[in-house]
Length: 316
Ligand code: AN0
Ligand code: CP
Image 1: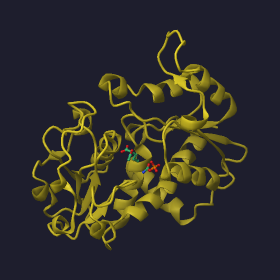
Image 2: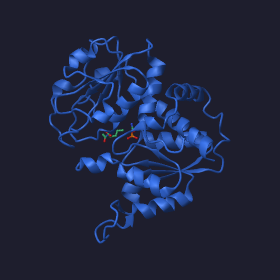
Image 3: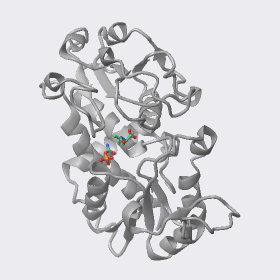
């Protein structure tokens, strides 16, 4: 594996999942593998889980992590090619990426979309420029359009908790006061289909995701109908893709509550976090025995570790 930006970088998902669950049993087994290697973990946006789990994952493999929060500590970056940089941006991504490529062996990058220009965001320009100019392997820590380490952790969590071979997995839109990216739902659907689950998405009209990410996904506009017989409910808000970056509704009737969970097949509740309680999901559901939010977050360490291990094994 050279870079890790989506499920398409995974050769064989089934064996990667098996290997990751093995790794989880003995995380320090390959402590010598990354000795002398350094990973730059670069954030253009906030994070709790990704920041901490990626550092831990690197350390488990003997890799030294160096974290930089560009949003608050770095020079303001320019991403457009050929611009006269007489505005706010002090440094071009081309130069910043090449400098980081000189210091590190691997780079992890978090970059959110602007949610203003869909074409720009969907080209995943920031991540792709980092790959182009850094010259070393790059791991996406959530880009404008995908969050592959989260989705990989989600597959691990489902594998650990499923009771049938091909569970019914439902991605449910839920309300939120602010406009959020489509990265988590896009990526989640891509990985769920690759894992060969029975995959549904439910959302109000106008919240259809890009067709690139909904191949093999059944769309059900009636949330309650979608919940019927579900083994896993994955709650998440996203802003509109078609009316790009807009909030079309904050309808509280889409909040995931215990009443709706009763329609499922003793379904488990999942969310990538951070979550707005009693907006996305009721306290009762998120604090119930069927809530997987903590195991999911815990598995972020092993999805990251598995990916860093693959990169170390194939590049150095
Ligand atoms: C981000 C999102 O929805 O993409 C990060 C989730 C991991 N969430 C928020 O900004 C609240
Ligand atoms: N789930 C997730 O990526 O969380 P953070 O944004 O806190 O890293």
